[in-house]
Amino acid sequence: MHLQVLSSGSGGNSALIRAGRARVLVDAGLTLAEMEARLSVAGVPPPVGERPTLDHVLVTHGHLDHARSAGAIARKHRALLHGSEAMLSTPSFRRAKRLSTLRVGAECVLDEELGLRARNVPIPHDAHPTIAFRIEHEGRVAVVLTDMGRPDEFVARELRGAHLLVLEFNHDRTMLLEGSYPAQLKRRVAGDAGHLSNDQAAQMLRWLAGDELHTLVLAHLSQHNNTPELALAAAHSVLAELGRSDVRVLVASQHEVGENLTV
Image (cartoon, rainbow, N blue to C red; front, top):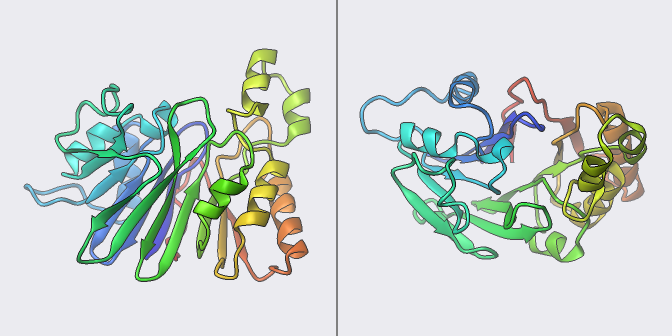
């Protein structure tokens, strides 16, 4: 299994997972044209005829930076679009021809022959429901966890076993509080239904960094209230504390397609 971040940040989020012959998209938060451009860079061709070029599109929640073109991309690439019942009636989903309702907190089999499974876990955020994904194939596990308002040990237990972890490091608390955001927006971002600060993400990492973990991708960094250097320092500090300096740490980009990472 491989994971490739196509985009990460408030401007739009998406990651491509390859497992055997299956191609799974987690979130589609860019415009259709930009999603097509990112997929092309990642080696996913435009569809020809009725043959699918994506098999599944999984959506974490209904905010546009995660769901913007989910229905359109699923329709164009002949994919099955998965979302919670609350998401299925949203404008982002309406263009899809094939829909599947995710039961929140449950596991679904994406491909029985391949043994490809996706478990979703509800997390605190101000779009209800918001879910994280634990995707497993042939004993390898990738976890995508962003848009979480506060650390939660139960969530960490449910997502345990990641070989590759995509984890939100959204903001530095001091930069947020001293920055130019309006007071209401600061309260939202820092609140229990907002986004993880570097310190909060570090706490989640303490709970999530098992013996299996070999690659950590820092995701959803704020362009205004964080820097890659601050996020990396927080992540490396925890990994050193845990004796896991062997874990490779990368920062996902808003503007460029990331490396095709082996899970």
